[in-house]
Length: 445
Ligand code: PFF
Image 1 (cartoon, rainbow, N blue to C red):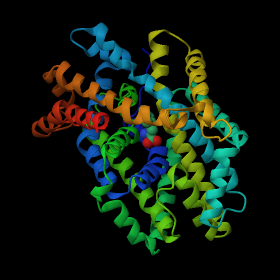
Image 2 (image 1 turned 90 degrees about the vertical axis):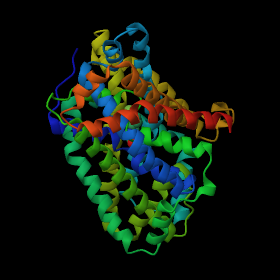
Image 3 (image 1 turned 180 degrees about the vertical axis):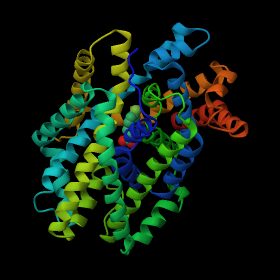
């Protein structure tokens, strides 16, 4: 077994680095926009509070108890049927589906870093045309920046967990938060601000259907990096004395706060400019550059810092997506990190290239299946199906398979008996039942 040791703050930084990423700033606003706003946000917040946080803690105790890769964790901690439970650990492979489209989006962001040195588009239409043009017709640019994102990520992972991630996080996360907070204060002075708050926080139930509920639940998993063993893997490096509940809650609160701030900022700008909130995956790339453009050359500096920080937030998450499979291969099969990455990287790369070309209009028809492009298929299958399924498995494992006394002994130092009972109830019953209901609803209605 070859997990490195984190310092206490190191775990929080790495877990936060994993959680805070494109999910918060790119995906949350655009999904909210497409799903009509408030009701989506409410379901997302409820899922984070009652399901996400409990599962986060569940993953942490599993990792901390076994101090091993995710597959071995299930095998080791199961009192019976170890051989069978080991297969639950294969949830780590969901990461390859996620990473392949995630790297494409990091590629878009890297492209926007370069673009931020030039004159930014000053109207929504110009920004929309620029982004739309890149996605649907400029395969070369997208491909080049996808490669850059791919190689940066692989390079960081070959350097190992601790050194690579902790250092990068320590500098860039605060920069990203500072820029978002500055933009938030600016947004407060705009007419669009009130409309944005209304859009995000007034639930409009007529917009809600089974697909949107499933998407909100799936997104809560995605944003907290749950349901595929990432948090479990990082927790394997947690020092013994760490306060699990506090660490988990800090990460969940930070992650949610960043998504909400990003949402308010982006929608304030959109409404102010009279743009359509349901603009899809291009939302961040269309609304923000126009605002930066209105600040003149100061705006270029803002834009460069924002996209650089966002790229790094994405890269620290990308690293965490691939880390569970790397740890599995290096500790179980004694592969070198390089060999593990060669195998995982090749598969991810192929899936990524297919997803990338599925958005490009000349190739889209070859890469569209059942009316859905390959990019969307990867996103939907991983976030809305596989992560929630992983969540059900983890909750059943901690709630029914591991002995309650064992679970309690891992948590008793970080929560009172009453809080423990509440948490245990959420993990054991609420989580699997709620996710199942949502999924069944989606299938039948
Ligand atoms: N939580 C990341 C984000 O919000 O961007 C994405 C992610 C990271 C998903 C790690 C899953 C994962 F295991």
